[in-house]
Length: 301
Image 1 (cartoon, one colour):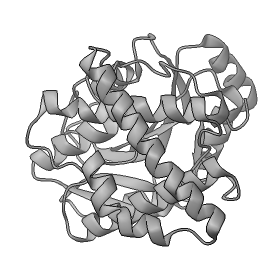
Image 2: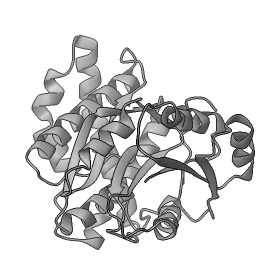
Image 3: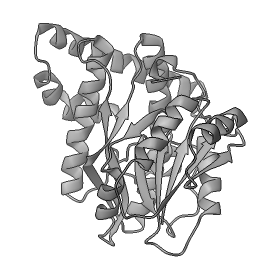
């Protein structure tokens, strides 16, 4: 059984699209979809629009995404390690081969986590759209390389899957897509990147939303230091500057994109500086679902 957990936040139309991207897949895998949202009106909307018995609703208590996911892990815990969880969001949707690709990856009993490939829905001809394509392409190369080398890497919070029966909970002080893979890796499981399974993402389209989203992500990753000193880091300022330098300089197709690339370097330096400043001021990462709204990432609502 595959339990697909879709965490959403008052985006009923987008969540409907996310659900349908799973229901429309041709697969022999048995699965159920659980939508986790703190707004009852989302449940009412979905019940009117989607009649499938495979779709259920869980009212998020409003204490944060990680808290809700821990409750789900406890509710659906099974000692059968062939059972799977897929974690994704209500503001993204996936390719029609996703369930089959993920199930195929888990045929290897040593695989504990599987992550899909984020694909930007944004126009590369705009600055923020270009930034999203560059960053997604960069992390795609990193994950593909580390997966082939059977090394550790962090998953994508947009869509990743885990085996049931291995963990019952995870720490709330950091992002789930970082700490959960490490908990599996620490137990001897492999992390696998199934790049043929794609998850489509609308990224921030202005400076305010981009800055807020990235600072929160950095704070979540930097908080890992408080939880474990031994976790290999795939997302850090050092890795971005030194390991990604050659790639970012060869990614642009024209002078305008090259100029945007230079701007991105300064933007990334700024948000790291701001994130470290906030952490120093004790403004730590909080387990708050959409703690800061980013309206430009909404695809339908």
